[in-house]
Length: 95
Image 1 (tube, rainbow, N blue to C red):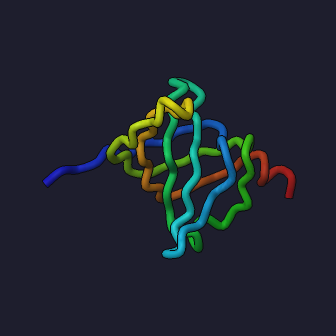
Image 2 (spheres, rainbow, N blue to C red; image 1 turned 90 degrees about the vertical axis):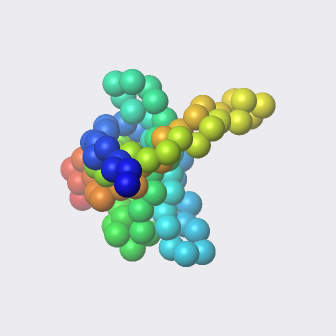
């Protein structure tokens, strides 16, 4: 049995979440420290935030497998991050 690493990242949402037909929200985040890209996934009903590209977010969850980037489209490889929580401090201050 494999266990995934629980991590917390802080970074910038590259794009707004896209919701799949099975109600999973998914959006890319570039971590500030390492500049690695993560593909954040969580149930859309649990997201509870309106996130746009460029929003600052903090995400905690389990890091999973890596989705290879498509070099012909200039995409970086991204680590799947199954999020338990997503916070957007700047959005909280605006409310």
